[in-house]
Image (tube, rainbow, N blue to C red; front, side, top):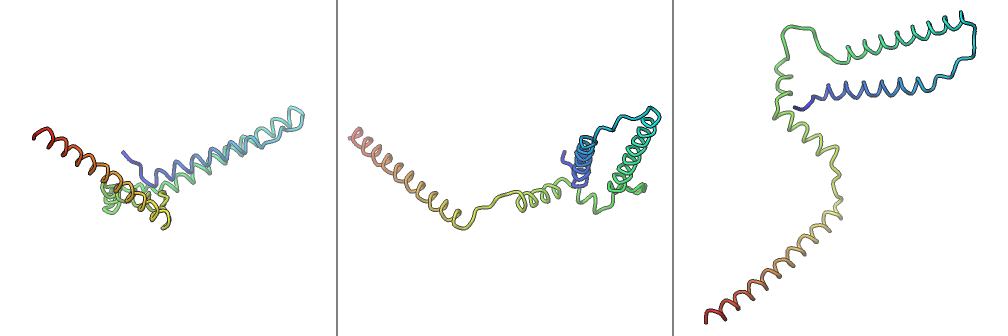
Length: 142
């Protein structure tokens, strides 16, 4: 089955967070050599910072998911939007509007001339074959 726009947005946000965290991890410079007590303090600070960031990210994700804890279930509008036919029409419109590269007027005109010319050429070829086969048929039947 298809996914909803909200699910796609959540997946995109998660992927962006992963890329961001990976790039931040690469950018961390190696710490200068310090005494063991200083290392423990610094490592505990980084662990706390990472945990804080993780908690903030989870909180943002839970807020952005928009799922209410109500027991009523999805509203009529949500059910209508998640209907297969409605979802198909919405996705089709979005694809035609934003993803399709439409030809310019000149390109469309030139392609139309090419189609008309090829149609005339094929029609002429079939007409010649028809006349030739008809003549052959009349020659055999006389």
